[in-house]
Structures are given as structure tokens and as C-alpha cells.
Length: 127
Image 1 (cartoon, one colour):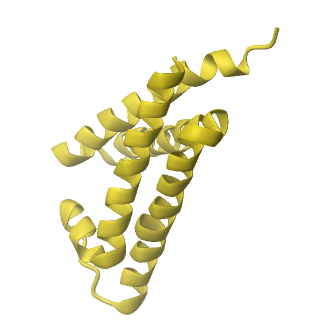
Image 2 (cartoon, helix red, strand yellow):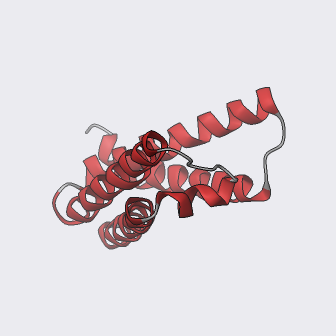
């Protein structure tokens, strides 16, 4: 199971880095997927910070965590993915049906959350 956990954390870490680097270099490219125009400096700054900087930091932590802090890295995946799932489901309930792009990400985030939970569960059990 340790090898599966390492592979999972490395893949998720690389995915976070991919999104982070794209958003850091060209924040508009990330927002084009949801038809949001970043038409001012503050908007681009915010996307660079959250989608760029935060995802780069999380991605680097997951890569480190794959080899040094598996439990903590899995907790981060569980919270990050779970937060997106809760936010997206709530939004669907109050706003209605989003694009297929959002449903694709919801599926990815559900899988991310479930796999993190499954891999984390044995590390949380006592005795």
C-alpha cells in the first residue's frame, strides 16, 4: 500500500504543479475554461496567487509528502478535494447545472477525495 500511496501523491502533486504553473504564467488561460475574463490587474493577481501560488505550494508539499509525510499529504488531498466537492455540489443545488467541464472536475475531485480517504484510513485507526 505504501507504493500505491507514493504513486498517488506524486501524480496528484504533479497535477497541482501543472495547474499552478499554468496559472502563475498565464492566469487567463486557466480562467478561459470557465469563460471568466480577467480584465484587471487585481483579478490576474488573485488567480496567480490562488490557482498559481497555492497549487504550486501544495504540489511541492505532496511531492515531499510522498516520501517523508504520507499521512499529512493524504490529509491535504482529502481536505482539498473534499472542499471542492462540497463547494461544487452546493453550487449545483443553489445555482443549477454547470458546464460539462465542471462536472468533469467534480468527478476528478470525488475520486481524489475517495482515494485519499481509502489510503488514509489505515493510518488513522488506533491499535
